[in-house]
Image (cartoon, rainbow, N blue to C red; front, side, top):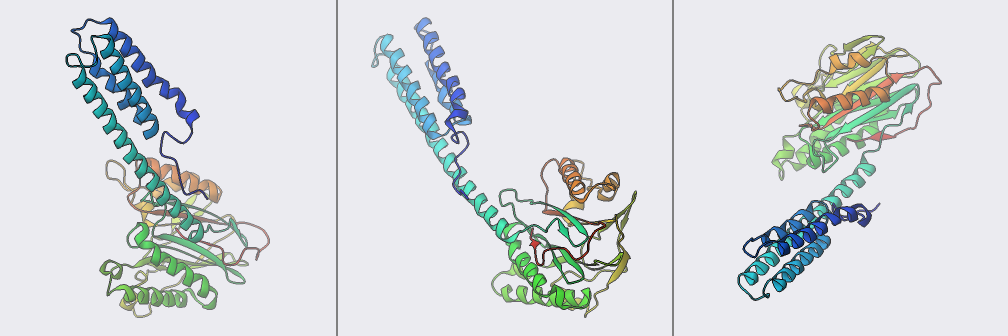
Length: 381
């Protein structure tokens, strides 16, 4: 992977060569106009427009070339109008050269920052590929599609997470959201996903699994409480799913997470269940009470899992995104089409930029051979 990225305007000469003709032509035209005008008309300062325009499409090197051409044109004009040292020509040339140098320095600083941002984005992309592996499109009889939108675009990584793994005769899934966003939440996300993968198949019930993971998160946060007060105040909302291959049903345990939506035929139902436990990391507040709810999940049904960054996205008027209402339009869509519809509609609702990380996971039970899936493949977002 190429970490180094060229700054805007210097990626390929072929893309900017045509635009370079604009300031060059401007210098030529202004030089001819100045030479044809009367000596009392002071149009020389207009030459600075050419180097000032160049950084909008080119880098420091091209800007320096245009600046040098502009100063040369100023010298030519002065020489043909009485001499370089005559009148106010020296002051105009010095001013033109100084402004051109400042423009070049500004462009060089901009290019350096662009390269630094490109490196940071490449590191984030590498981390995403290493930690944020996607859930496979097919796990047993389940068809799965995901979408992740980071609030911090430059980082392209955040505190929302999800993963799925085989348990022998079915699949277990988790979707969660670490309090906070961006790189500060990645540690908790990575810990929870790693722990889930290791122990998901070792617990008979989702309640036992949630209880164990709550203990892992609590110990992790306690370890950092002495040195990082913000981390000590973190917690993770999470939703656990257990979907058997050979039964038209599923079970869920909700730890403070938004309830999933069940799409069946033309209806959309929110699976609020009988109650929810507190988020992971706060389990001591409930003394082992982790409700487990069962519901029917038949062939053709689709489950939509999401994080609160979806339903809390606001439009310009401050209205929240009406997820249930919008999903009702696409109940017959495949999982991939469904999450793509929501992604486009959500970004349009929020004006193209979200205030929090957002993740979507669509799971559809399809007819087919059960038991075919890759063990342990997962995604972290």
